[in-house]
Length: 588
Image 1 (tube, rainbow, N blue to C red):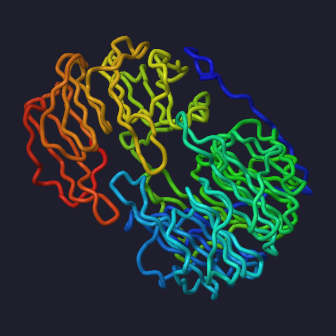
Image 2 (cartoon, rainbow, N blue to C red):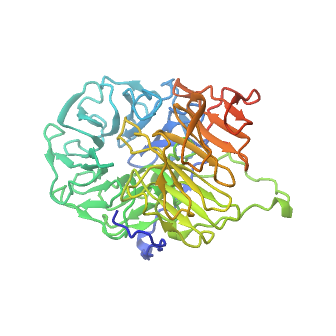
Image 3 (cartoon, rainbow, N blue to C red):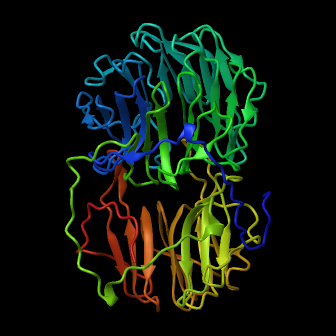
Protein backbone atom coordinates (compact mmCIF):
# COMPACT_ATOMS: atom_id res chain seq x y z
CA UNK A 1 0.00 0.00 0.00
CA UNK A 2 1.26 3.51 -0.77
CA UNK A 3 1.16 4.79 2.78
CA UNK A 4 4.13 4.62 5.16
CA UNK A 5 4.20 1.41 7.20
CA UNK A 6 5.08 0.62 10.80
CA UNK A 7 5.06 4.22 11.91
CA UNK A 8 2.87 6.24 14.20
CA UNK A 9 -0.06 7.82 12.43
CA UNK A 10 0.72 11.40 11.49
CA UNK A 11 -1.89 14.13 11.45
CA UNK A 12 -3.07 15.20 8.01
CA UNK A 13 -2.25 18.72 6.83
CA UNK A 14 -4.80 21.44 7.53
CA UNK A 15 -6.20 23.34 4.57
CA UNK A 16 -7.58 26.81 5.35
CA UNK A 17 -9.88 28.32 2.74
CA UNK A 18 -11.44 31.79 2.93
CA UNK A 19 -14.75 32.65 1.28
CA UNK A 20 -15.80 36.17 0.39
CA UNK A 21 -19.02 37.60 1.79
CA UNK A 22 -20.43 37.72 -1.73
CA UNK A 23 -20.34 33.93 -1.90
CA UNK A 24 -21.77 32.87 1.44
CA UNK A 25 -22.01 29.16 2.23
CA UNK A 26 -25.42 27.52 2.59
CA UNK A 27 -26.72 27.26 6.16
CA UNK A 28 -28.21 23.81 6.81
CA UNK A 29 -30.72 22.68 9.39
CA UNK A 30 -32.42 19.31 10.00
CA UNK A 31 -36.02 18.38 9.27
CA UNK A 32 -37.33 17.31 12.67
CA UNK A 33 -40.93 16.51 11.73
CA UNK A 34 -40.06 13.00 10.44
CA UNK A 35 -38.72 10.18 12.58
CA UNK A 36 -35.20 8.95 11.69
CA UNK A 37 -34.94 6.77 8.59
CA UNK A 38 -32.29 5.52 6.18
CA UNK A 39 -32.82 8.12 3.45
CA UNK A 40 -31.36 7.20 0.08
CA UNK A 41 -32.37 9.83 -2.50
CA UNK A 42 -33.67 13.39 -2.65
CA UNK A 43 -34.63 15.84 -5.41
CA UNK A 44 -36.26 19.26 -5.66
CA UNK A 45 -38.12 21.40 -8.18
CA UNK A 46 -36.59 24.41 -9.95
CA UNK A 47 -37.82 26.84 -7.29
CA UNK A 48 -37.03 24.46 -4.40
CA UNK A 49 -40.60 24.41 -3.09
CA UNK A 50 -41.32 20.79 -4.13
CA UNK A 51 -39.08 18.16 -2.53
CA UNK A 52 -39.20 14.39 -2.97
CA UNK A 53 -37.18 12.05 -0.73
CA UNK A 54 -37.06 8.25 -0.73
CA UNK A 55 -36.20 5.79 2.04
CA UNK A 56 -33.96 2.76 1.67
CA UNK A 57 -35.09 1.18 4.91
CA UNK A 58 -36.94 1.92 8.13
CA UNK A 59 -36.69 0.41 11.57
CA UNK A 60 -40.08 -1.24 11.10
CA UNK A 61 -39.16 -2.55 7.62
CA UNK A 62 -35.37 -3.08 7.61
CA UNK A 63 -35.23 -3.73 3.87
CA UNK A 64 -37.65 -1.13 2.57
CA UNK A 65 -39.25 2.26 2.98
CA UNK A 66 -41.53 4.81 1.35
CA UNK A 67 -41.42 7.98 -0.73
CA UNK A 68 -42.05 11.29 1.05
CA UNK A 69 -43.03 14.61 -0.54
CA UNK A 70 -43.12 18.25 0.47
CA UNK A 71 -44.86 21.11 -1.34
CA UNK A 72 -43.85 23.85 1.10
CA UNK A 73 -40.03 23.89 0.80
CA UNK A 74 -39.63 21.23 3.46
CA UNK A 75 -41.78 22.72 6.21
CA UNK A 76 -43.82 19.51 6.20
CA UNK A 77 -43.55 16.12 4.51
CA UNK A 78 -46.23 13.58 3.56
CA UNK A 79 -45.63 9.85 3.19
CA UNK A 80 -46.85 8.27 -0.04
CA UNK A 81 -49.47 5.57 0.55
CA UNK A 82 -50.20 4.66 -3.06
CA UNK A 83 -47.30 2.16 -3.04
CA UNK A 84 -48.34 -0.03 -0.14
CA UNK A 85 -45.33 -2.33 0.26
CA UNK A 86 -42.04 -0.79 1.41
CA UNK A 87 -39.46 -0.65 -1.39
CA UNK A 88 -35.68 -0.41 -1.57
CA UNK A 89 -35.76 3.01 -3.27
CA UNK A 90 -32.53 4.04 -4.94
CA UNK A 91 -33.19 7.21 -7.00
CA UNK A 92 -35.75 9.99 -7.49
CA UNK A 93 -36.20 12.83 -9.98
CA UNK A 94 -38.81 15.50 -10.68
CA UNK A 95 -39.68 18.01 -13.37
CA UNK A 96 -38.93 21.72 -13.10
CA UNK A 97 -42.39 22.48 -11.73
CA UNK A 98 -42.26 19.40 -9.45
CA UNK A 99 -45.48 17.96 -10.87
CA UNK A 100 -43.89 14.91 -12.51
CA UNK A 101 -41.97 12.59 -10.19
CA UNK A 102 -40.01 9.40 -10.95
CA UNK A 103 -38.77 6.94 -8.31
CA UNK A 104 -36.64 3.86 -9.00
CA UNK A 105 -36.05 0.84 -6.77
CA UNK A 106 -33.69 -2.15 -6.75
CA UNK A 107 -36.11 -4.83 -5.56
CA UNK A 108 -35.98 -7.16 -2.58
CA UNK A 109 -32.90 -8.95 -1.29
CA UNK A 110 -32.73 -12.26 -3.13
CA UNK A 111 -30.87 -14.06 -0.35
CA UNK A 112 -29.68 -13.62 3.21
CA UNK A 113 -26.40 -11.95 2.25
CA UNK A 114 -28.29 -8.76 1.42
CA UNK A 115 -25.98 -8.31 -1.58
CA UNK A 116 -28.21 -9.77 -4.30
CA UNK A 117 -31.47 -8.12 -5.34
CA UNK A 118 -34.41 -9.33 -7.37
CA UNK A 119 -34.66 -6.17 -9.47
CA UNK A 120 -37.13 -3.35 -9.04
CA UNK A 121 -39.44 -1.08 -11.00
CA UNK A 122 -39.64 2.59 -11.93
CA UNK A 123 -42.67 4.44 -10.58
CA UNK A 124 -44.11 7.70 -11.90
CA UNK A 125 -46.40 10.41 -10.56
CA UNK A 126 -48.01 13.36 -12.39
CA UNK A 127 -49.53 14.92 -9.27
CA UNK A 128 -46.44 16.07 -7.31
CA UNK A 129 -45.91 12.59 -5.87
CA UNK A 130 -49.36 12.20 -4.32
CA UNK A 131 -49.88 8.95 -6.21
CA UNK A 132 -47.19 6.75 -7.78
CA UNK A 133 -47.90 4.16 -10.43
CA UNK A 134 -45.64 1.43 -11.74
CA UNK A 135 -44.39 2.07 -15.29
CA UNK A 136 -43.67 -0.46 -18.03
CA UNK A 137 -39.90 -0.13 -17.51
CA UNK A 138 -38.29 -3.57 -17.07
CA UNK A 139 -37.38 -4.90 -13.63
CA UNK A 140 -33.73 -3.95 -13.09
CA UNK A 141 -31.16 -3.04 -10.44
CA UNK A 142 -31.96 0.62 -11.07
CA UNK A 143 -29.31 3.00 -9.83
CA UNK A 144 -30.26 6.45 -11.18
CA UNK A 145 -33.10 8.28 -12.92
CA UNK A 146 -33.48 11.80 -14.30
CA UNK A 147 -35.85 13.75 -16.54
CA UNK A 148 -36.16 16.88 -18.67
CA UNK A 149 -37.62 20.11 -17.28
CA UNK A 150 -41.04 19.25 -18.72
CA UNK A 151 -40.98 15.66 -17.43
CA UNK A 152 -41.76 14.24 -20.88
CA UNK A 153 -38.30 12.75 -21.39
CA UNK A 154 -36.99 10.31 -18.75
CA UNK A 155 -33.74 8.35 -18.64
CA UNK A 156 -32.63 5.65 -16.19
CA UNK A 157 -29.63 3.39 -15.71
CA UNK A 158 -29.04 0.07 -14.01
CA UNK A 159 -26.00 -2.02 -13.24
CA UNK A 160 -25.04 -4.56 -15.88
CA UNK A 161 -27.44 -3.18 -18.48
CA UNK A 162 -27.96 -0.58 -21.20
CA UNK A 163 -29.29 2.96 -20.79
CA UNK A 164 -33.08 3.17 -20.79
CA UNK A 165 -35.14 6.16 -21.91
CA UNK A 166 -38.75 7.20 -22.34
CA UNK A 167 -39.93 9.99 -24.66
CA UNK A 168 -43.58 9.90 -23.59
CA UNK A 169 -43.47 10.59 -19.84
CA UNK A 170 -42.84 6.97 -18.83
CA UNK A 171 -45.42 5.22 -21.00
CA UNK A 172 -42.93 3.39 -23.21
CA UNK A 173 -39.24 2.55 -22.76
CA UNK A 174 -36.36 1.67 -25.09
CA UNK A 175 -32.70 0.81 -24.51
CA UNK A 176 -29.60 2.33 -26.09
CA UNK A 177 -25.87 2.53 -25.50
CA UNK A 178 -23.47 -0.21 -24.36
CA UNK A 179 -24.06 -2.65 -21.51
CA UNK A 180 -22.09 -1.39 -18.53
CA UNK A 181 -22.24 -1.10 -14.74
CA UNK A 182 -24.09 2.22 -14.95
CA UNK A 183 -24.56 4.16 -11.70
CA UNK A 184 -25.62 7.70 -12.70
CA UNK A 185 -27.57 9.53 -15.43
CA UNK A 186 -28.21 13.24 -15.95
CA UNK A 187 -30.50 14.96 -18.49
CA UNK A 188 -30.41 18.55 -19.75
CA UNK A 189 -33.52 20.71 -19.40
CA UNK A 190 -34.60 20.02 -23.01
CA UNK A 191 -33.68 16.33 -22.89
CA UNK A 192 -31.34 16.46 -25.88
CA UNK A 193 -28.09 16.20 -23.93
CA UNK A 194 -27.35 13.36 -21.53
CA UNK A 195 -24.39 12.26 -19.42
CA UNK A 196 -24.00 8.79 -17.90
CA UNK A 197 -21.34 7.42 -15.54
CA UNK A 198 -20.29 3.82 -15.00
CA UNK A 199 -18.13 2.31 -12.28
CA UNK A 200 -16.25 -0.11 -14.52
CA UNK A 201 -15.56 -3.75 -13.69
CA UNK A 202 -14.61 -5.39 -10.43
CA UNK A 203 -10.95 -6.34 -10.10
CA UNK A 204 -8.35 -6.44 -7.34
CA UNK A 205 -10.74 -5.55 -4.54
CA UNK A 206 -12.32 -2.53 -6.26
CA UNK A 207 -14.10 -1.28 -9.37
CA UNK A 208 -11.97 0.43 -12.02
CA UNK A 209 -11.94 1.38 -15.67
CA UNK A 210 -15.24 3.23 -15.64
CA UNK A 211 -16.16 5.89 -18.17
CA UNK A 212 -18.34 8.95 -18.56
CA UNK A 213 -20.40 8.82 -21.74
CA UNK A 214 -22.30 11.62 -23.49
CA UNK A 215 -25.23 11.92 -25.88
CA UNK A 216 -26.41 14.95 -27.84
CA UNK A 217 -29.41 13.30 -29.50
CA UNK A 218 -31.60 12.40 -26.52
CA UNK A 219 -29.79 9.14 -25.85
CA UNK A 220 -30.03 7.57 -29.31
CA UNK A 221 -26.24 7.40 -29.66
CA UNK A 222 -23.42 7.69 -27.13
CA UNK A 223 -19.75 8.71 -27.17
CA UNK A 224 -17.05 8.16 -24.57
CA UNK A 225 -15.85 11.35 -22.85
CA UNK A 226 -12.32 10.00 -22.70
CA UNK A 227 -10.44 13.30 -22.71
CA UNK A 228 -9.78 14.43 -19.16
CA UNK A 229 -12.16 11.89 -17.63
CA UNK A 230 -9.73 9.21 -16.40
CA UNK A 231 -10.60 5.66 -17.40
CA UNK A 232 -9.25 4.39 -14.09
CA UNK A 233 -12.03 6.21 -12.24
CA UNK A 234 -14.59 4.39 -10.13
CA UNK A 235 -17.22 6.90 -11.17
CA UNK A 236 -20.22 7.28 -8.91
CA UNK A 237 -22.24 10.30 -10.03
CA UNK A 238 -22.39 12.88 -12.79
CA UNK A 239 -24.42 16.10 -13.06
CA UNK A 240 -24.76 18.94 -15.56
CA UNK A 241 -26.12 22.44 -16.03
CA UNK A 242 -29.54 22.85 -17.67
CA UNK A 243 -27.98 23.44 -21.11
CA UNK A 244 -25.37 20.66 -20.74
CA UNK A 245 -22.45 23.08 -21.15
CA UNK A 246 -21.03 22.44 -17.67
CA UNK A 247 -20.59 19.04 -16.02
CA UNK A 248 -19.31 17.71 -12.74
CA UNK A 249 -18.47 14.14 -11.76
CA UNK A 250 -17.30 12.38 -8.61
CA UNK A 251 -15.17 9.26 -8.30
CA UNK A 252 -15.54 6.82 -5.44
CA UNK A 253 -12.48 7.13 -3.17
CA UNK A 254 -11.31 9.88 -5.50
CA UNK A 255 -11.88 13.50 -6.43
CA UNK A 256 -14.37 15.92 -7.94
CA UNK A 257 -13.98 16.61 -11.67
CA UNK A 258 -15.30 19.66 -13.52
CA UNK A 259 -15.94 20.24 -17.24
CA UNK A 260 -16.74 23.68 -18.66
CA UNK A 261 -16.85 22.57 -22.32
CA UNK A 262 -19.80 20.15 -22.41
CA UNK A 263 -17.65 17.17 -21.43
CA UNK A 264 -14.91 17.62 -24.01
CA UNK A 265 -12.41 17.77 -21.13
CA UNK A 266 -12.44 17.39 -17.35
CA UNK A 267 -10.24 19.00 -14.71
CA UNK A 268 -9.64 17.43 -11.30
CA UNK A 269 -10.37 19.68 -8.34
CA UNK A 270 -7.42 20.39 -6.03
CA UNK A 271 -9.03 22.84 -3.61
CA UNK A 272 -10.48 20.13 -1.35
CA UNK A 273 -6.99 18.82 -0.69
CA UNK A 274 -7.64 15.09 -0.33
CA UNK A 275 -9.71 12.25 -1.74
CA UNK A 276 -13.01 11.15 -0.23
CA UNK A 277 -15.59 8.40 -0.57
CA UNK A 278 -17.84 10.70 -2.61
CA UNK A 279 -21.52 9.80 -2.63
CA UNK A 280 -23.66 12.66 -3.99
CA UNK A 281 -23.41 15.61 -6.37
CA UNK A 282 -25.62 18.44 -7.66
CA UNK A 283 -25.37 21.63 -9.75
CA UNK A 284 -27.43 24.77 -10.34
CA UNK A 285 -29.08 25.42 -13.71
CA UNK A 286 -26.29 27.71 -14.94
CA UNK A 287 -23.54 25.53 -13.43
CA UNK A 288 -22.30 28.30 -11.12
CA UNK A 289 -23.15 26.48 -7.87
CA UNK A 290 -21.88 22.94 -7.28
CA UNK A 291 -22.25 20.83 -4.12
CA UNK A 292 -20.72 17.44 -3.36
CA UNK A 293 -21.31 15.20 -0.33
CA UNK A 294 -19.05 12.45 1.00
CA UNK A 295 -20.00 9.17 2.63
CA UNK A 296 -18.96 9.56 6.26
CA UNK A 297 -17.77 13.02 5.42
CA UNK A 298 -18.93 16.58 4.78
CA UNK A 299 -20.79 18.68 2.24
CA UNK A 300 -18.50 20.79 0.05
CA UNK A 301 -19.81 23.82 -1.85
CA UNK A 302 -18.55 25.90 -4.77
CA UNK A 303 -20.03 29.17 -5.98
CA UNK A 304 -17.62 29.61 -8.90
CA UNK A 305 -18.49 26.66 -11.17
CA UNK A 306 -16.24 24.27 -9.28
CA UNK A 307 -13.06 26.36 -9.40
CA UNK A 308 -12.83 26.17 -5.61
CA UNK A 309 -14.73 24.14 -3.00
CA UNK A 310 -15.23 25.02 0.65
CA UNK A 311 -16.40 22.67 3.40
CA UNK A 312 -19.82 23.67 4.73
CA UNK A 313 -19.55 23.66 8.51
CA UNK A 314 -23.29 24.14 9.05
CA UNK A 315 -23.92 20.57 7.90
CA UNK A 316 -22.63 17.80 10.18
CA UNK A 317 -19.26 16.21 9.42
CA UNK A 318 -18.48 12.47 9.51
CA UNK A 319 -22.03 11.83 8.33
CA UNK A 320 -23.32 9.18 5.93
CA UNK A 321 -24.62 11.57 3.26
CA UNK A 322 -26.48 9.67 0.54
CA UNK A 323 -27.99 12.31 -1.80
CA UNK A 324 -28.04 16.06 -2.42
CA UNK A 325 -30.09 18.40 -4.62
CA UNK A 326 -30.49 22.13 -5.21
CA UNK A 327 -32.91 24.52 -6.86
CA UNK A 328 -32.15 26.18 -10.21
CA UNK A 329 -30.34 29.12 -8.58
CA UNK A 330 -28.25 27.04 -6.18
CA UNK A 331 -29.53 28.93 -3.14
CA UNK A 332 -31.89 26.25 -1.79
CA UNK A 333 -30.32 22.86 -1.04
CA UNK A 334 -31.71 19.57 0.21
CA UNK A 335 -29.54 16.68 1.40
CA UNK A 336 -30.27 13.42 3.13
CA UNK A 337 -28.44 11.02 5.39
CA UNK A 338 -28.68 7.25 5.14
CA UNK A 339 -26.90 5.72 8.16
CA UNK A 340 -24.35 3.03 8.81
CA UNK A 341 -25.03 -0.59 7.92
CA UNK A 342 -27.91 -2.12 9.82
CA UNK A 343 -29.23 1.23 11.06
CA UNK A 344 -32.09 3.52 10.03
CA UNK A 345 -31.25 6.73 11.83
CA UNK A 346 -30.74 9.23 9.00
CA UNK A 347 -32.39 12.60 8.47
CA UNK A 348 -33.09 15.30 5.87
CA UNK A 349 -31.16 18.57 5.98
CA UNK A 350 -32.26 21.75 4.21
CA UNK A 351 -30.71 25.10 3.41
CA UNK A 352 -32.17 27.51 4.35
CA UNK A 353 -33.12 25.53 7.49
CA UNK A 354 -36.78 24.53 7.84
CA UNK A 355 -38.90 26.07 10.59
CA UNK A 356 -39.04 24.22 13.88
CA UNK A 357 -41.46 21.33 13.74
CA UNK A 358 -44.60 21.31 15.83
CA UNK A 359 -43.84 17.65 16.48
CA UNK A 360 -40.61 18.59 18.21
CA UNK A 361 -41.00 19.59 21.90
CA UNK A 362 -40.53 23.32 22.34
CA UNK A 363 -38.93 22.82 25.72
CA UNK A 364 -37.58 19.88 27.68
CA UNK A 365 -37.69 19.66 31.47
CA UNK A 366 -34.31 20.32 32.98
CA UNK A 367 -32.61 17.16 34.15
CA UNK A 368 -31.25 16.95 37.66
CA UNK A 369 -27.48 17.35 37.75
CA UNK A 370 -25.78 13.95 37.80
CA UNK A 371 -24.14 12.69 40.96
CA UNK A 372 -20.43 11.82 40.79
CA UNK A 373 -21.36 8.18 40.27
CA UNK A 374 -23.54 9.15 37.32
CA UNK A 375 -21.05 11.36 35.51
CA UNK A 376 -20.94 10.50 31.83
CA UNK A 377 -17.66 9.87 30.01
CA UNK A 378 -16.24 12.81 28.04
CA UNK A 379 -15.20 11.73 24.54
CA UNK A 380 -12.73 13.37 22.19
CA UNK A 381 -11.49 12.27 18.75
CA UNK A 382 -8.05 10.86 18.00
CA UNK A 383 -7.19 13.43 15.35
CA UNK A 384 -4.39 11.37 13.84
CA UNK A 385 -6.74 8.49 12.94
CA UNK A 386 -9.19 10.50 10.81
CA UNK A 387 -10.21 9.28 7.36
CA UNK A 388 -10.52 5.52 7.86
CA UNK A 389 -13.50 3.19 8.17
CA UNK A 390 -12.88 1.71 11.60
CA UNK A 391 -14.78 -1.49 12.39
CA UNK A 392 -13.61 -2.88 15.75
CA UNK A 393 -11.66 -1.78 18.83
CA UNK A 394 -10.55 -3.44 22.06
CA UNK A 395 -8.42 -2.45 25.06
CA UNK A 396 -6.50 -3.93 27.97
CA UNK A 397 -7.77 -3.94 31.54
CA UNK A 398 -5.93 -0.72 32.39
CA UNK A 399 -6.74 0.94 29.05
CA UNK A 400 -3.12 1.58 28.07
CA UNK A 401 -3.06 -0.93 25.22
CA UNK A 402 -5.59 -0.41 22.42
CA UNK A 403 -6.02 -2.35 19.19
CA UNK A 404 -8.30 -1.05 16.42
CA UNK A 405 -8.94 -2.56 12.99
CA UNK A 406 -10.30 -1.14 9.76
CA UNK A 407 -12.95 -2.38 7.40
CA UNK A 408 -11.63 -0.36 4.45
CA UNK A 409 -9.37 2.51 3.44
CA UNK A 410 -9.44 4.97 0.56
CA UNK A 411 -6.48 3.23 -1.07
CA UNK A 412 -7.98 -0.22 -0.46
CA UNK A 413 -11.73 0.35 -0.32
CA UNK A 414 -12.58 -3.19 0.74
CA UNK A 415 -9.80 -3.84 3.22
CA UNK A 416 -7.68 -2.22 5.91
CA UNK A 417 -5.11 -2.86 8.59
CA UNK A 418 -4.71 -3.33 12.34
CA UNK A 419 -3.40 -0.44 14.43
CA UNK A 420 -1.95 -0.67 17.95
CA UNK A 421 -1.38 1.85 20.73
CA UNK A 422 0.56 1.17 23.93
CA UNK A 423 0.23 4.69 25.34
CA UNK A 424 -3.55 4.94 25.90
CA UNK A 425 -4.18 6.19 22.36
CA UNK A 426 -1.62 9.01 22.26
CA UNK A 427 -0.09 7.34 19.18
CA UNK A 428 -0.94 4.37 16.97
CA UNK A 429 1.30 2.06 14.93
CA UNK A 430 0.11 0.26 11.80
CA UNK A 431 0.69 -3.50 11.65
CA UNK A 432 2.75 -4.74 8.70
CA UNK A 433 2.96 -8.44 9.58
CA UNK A 434 -0.36 -9.39 7.96
CA UNK A 435 0.53 -7.78 4.63
CA UNK A 436 -2.60 -7.65 2.49
CA UNK A 437 -5.45 -5.42 3.70
CA UNK A 438 -8.32 -7.38 5.30
CA UNK A 439 -11.97 -6.68 6.00
CA UNK A 440 -11.58 -6.94 9.76
CA UNK A 441 -14.75 -7.43 11.76
CA UNK A 442 -14.16 -8.19 15.49
CA UNK A 443 -11.34 -8.20 18.05
CA UNK A 444 -10.56 -9.28 21.61
CA UNK A 445 -7.65 -8.79 24.03
CA UNK A 446 -6.28 -10.31 27.23
CA UNK A 447 -6.30 -8.25 30.43
CA UNK A 448 -2.60 -7.37 30.18
CA UNK A 449 -2.93 -6.48 26.46
CA UNK A 450 -0.27 -8.97 25.41
CA UNK A 451 -2.55 -11.39 23.56
CA UNK A 452 -4.83 -10.12 20.77
CA UNK A 453 -7.24 -11.91 18.42
CA UNK A 454 -8.74 -10.24 15.34
CA UNK A 455 -11.26 -11.90 13.01
CA UNK A 456 -12.02 -11.01 9.39
CA UNK A 457 -14.79 -11.77 6.90
CA UNK A 458 -12.57 -12.23 3.85
CA UNK A 459 -12.31 -10.35 0.59
CA UNK A 460 -15.26 -8.54 -0.89
CA UNK A 461 -16.30 -10.59 -3.92
CA UNK A 462 -18.17 -7.73 -5.59
CA UNK A 463 -21.71 -6.43 -5.57
CA UNK A 464 -24.30 -9.20 -5.36
CA UNK A 465 -21.67 -11.71 -4.15
CA UNK A 466 -20.83 -10.86 -0.54
CA UNK A 467 -17.60 -11.97 1.17
CA UNK A 468 -15.33 -14.95 0.51
CA UNK A 469 -14.71 -15.79 4.15
CA UNK A 470 -11.66 -15.00 6.28
CA UNK A 471 -9.50 -16.22 9.11
CA UNK A 472 -8.65 -15.42 12.72
CA UNK A 473 -5.29 -13.79 13.41
CA UNK A 474 -3.47 -13.91 16.75
CA UNK A 475 -0.70 -11.91 18.43
CA UNK A 476 1.14 -12.69 21.66
CA UNK A 477 3.40 -9.61 21.61
CA UNK A 478 0.90 -6.78 22.21
CA UNK A 479 -0.07 -6.59 18.55
CA UNK A 480 3.41 -6.08 17.13
CA UNK A 481 3.09 -9.16 14.91
CA UNK A 482 0.03 -11.20 13.91
CA UNK A 483 -0.13 -14.73 12.54
CA UNK A 484 -3.09 -16.52 10.98
CA UNK A 485 -4.37 -19.34 13.17
CA UNK A 486 -5.67 -22.75 12.18
CA UNK A 487 -9.28 -21.61 12.68
CA UNK A 488 -11.41 -22.46 9.63
CA UNK A 489 -12.15 -19.88 6.96
CA UNK A 490 -15.55 -18.33 7.56
CA UNK A 491 -17.69 -15.22 7.84
CA UNK A 492 -16.50 -14.52 11.39
CA UNK A 493 -18.88 -12.35 13.36
CA UNK A 494 -17.59 -12.34 16.93
CA UNK A 495 -14.55 -13.21 19.07
CA UNK A 496 -13.87 -13.21 22.82
CA UNK A 497 -11.13 -14.39 25.18
CA UNK A 498 -10.37 -14.90 28.86
CA UNK A 499 -8.39 -12.44 30.94
CA UNK A 500 -5.32 -14.63 30.57
CA UNK A 501 -5.82 -14.94 26.82
CA UNK A 502 -5.32 -18.70 26.83
CA UNK A 503 -8.94 -19.56 26.03
CA UNK A 504 -10.61 -18.00 22.95
CA UNK A 505 -14.09 -18.37 21.45
CA UNK A 506 -15.38 -17.19 18.08
CA UNK A 507 -18.62 -17.41 16.10
CA UNK A 508 -19.47 -17.16 12.41
CA UNK A 509 -22.56 -16.86 10.26
CA UNK A 510 -23.84 -20.22 9.06
CA UNK A 511 -21.48 -22.07 11.38
CA UNK A 512 -20.94 -23.45 14.86
CA UNK A 513 -19.26 -21.98 17.93
CA UNK A 514 -15.51 -22.43 17.83
CA UNK A 515 -13.16 -22.48 20.83
CA UNK A 516 -9.46 -22.76 21.53
CA UNK A 517 -7.97 -23.70 24.91
CA UNK A 518 -4.30 -23.28 23.88
CA UNK A 519 -4.03 -19.63 22.84
CA UNK A 520 -5.32 -20.16 19.29
CA UNK A 521 -3.01 -23.09 18.46
CA UNK A 522 -5.93 -25.49 17.84
CA UNK A 523 -9.70 -25.11 17.48
CA UNK A 524 -12.76 -27.30 18.11
CA UNK A 525 -16.44 -26.71 17.36
CA UNK A 526 -19.41 -27.05 19.68
CA UNK A 527 -23.03 -25.99 19.83
CA UNK A 528 -25.57 -25.97 17.00
CA UNK A 529 -25.01 -24.54 13.52
CA UNK A 530 -26.67 -21.14 13.40
CA UNK A 531 -26.29 -17.62 12.04
CA UNK A 532 -24.22 -16.53 15.03
CA UNK A 533 -23.72 -12.80 15.50
CA UNK A 534 -21.81 -12.34 18.80
CA UNK A 535 -20.09 -14.11 21.69
CA UNK A 536 -18.96 -13.06 25.18
CA UNK A 537 -17.39 -14.79 28.18
CA UNK A 538 -16.40 -14.22 31.78
CA UNK A 539 -12.82 -13.45 32.75
CA UNK A 540 -12.19 -17.11 33.57
CA UNK A 541 -14.08 -18.35 30.50
CA UNK A 542 -16.25 -20.84 32.35
CA UNK A 543 -19.46 -18.94 31.58
CA UNK A 544 -20.22 -17.90 28.00
CA UNK A 545 -23.09 -16.38 26.02
CA UNK A 546 -23.68 -16.42 22.25
CA UNK A 547 -26.31 -14.56 20.23
CA UNK A 548 -27.72 -15.58 16.85
CA UNK A 549 -29.60 -13.44 14.38
CA UNK A 550 -32.00 -16.15 13.25
CA UNK A 551 -32.90 -16.98 9.66
CA UNK A 552 -33.51 -14.73 6.71
CA UNK A 553 -37.20 -14.36 5.85
CA UNK A 554 -39.52 -11.65 4.58
CA UNK A 555 -36.87 -8.98 4.08
CA UNK A 556 -35.06 -9.48 7.39
CA UNK A 557 -33.66 -11.86 10.02
CA UNK A 558 -35.93 -13.20 12.75
CA UNK A 559 -36.24 -16.02 15.25
CA UNK A 560 -32.78 -15.64 16.78
CA UNK A 561 -31.95 -16.82 20.29
CA UNK A 562 -29.37 -16.32 23.01
CA UNK A 563 -27.44 -19.42 24.09
CA UNK A 564 -25.55 -20.04 27.35
CA UNK A 565 -22.70 -22.30 28.47
CA UNK A 566 -21.42 -22.94 32.00
CA UNK A 567 -18.64 -25.40 31.11
CA UNK A 568 -16.27 -23.23 29.04
CA UNK A 569 -18.23 -23.75 25.84
CA UNK A 570 -18.30 -27.55 25.77
CA UNK A 571 -22.10 -27.68 25.88
CA UNK A 572 -24.73 -25.05 25.16
CA UNK A 573 -28.38 -24.50 26.09
CA UNK A 574 -30.89 -22.02 24.70
CA UNK A 575 -31.93 -19.24 27.06
CA UNK A 576 -35.66 -19.40 27.84
CA UNK A 577 -35.83 -15.81 29.09
CA UNK A 578 -34.70 -14.09 25.89
CA UNK A 579 -37.42 -13.47 23.25
CA UNK A 580 -36.92 -15.69 20.21
CA UNK A 581 -38.30 -13.14 17.76
CA UNK A 582 -35.17 -10.98 18.14
CA UNK A 583 -32.67 -10.21 15.40
CA UNK A 584 -29.81 -10.34 17.94
CA UNK A 585 -26.64 -8.51 16.98
CA UNK A 586 -24.29 -8.10 19.95
CA UNK A 587 -24.04 -8.88 23.65
CA UNK A 588 -21.69 -8.48 26.59
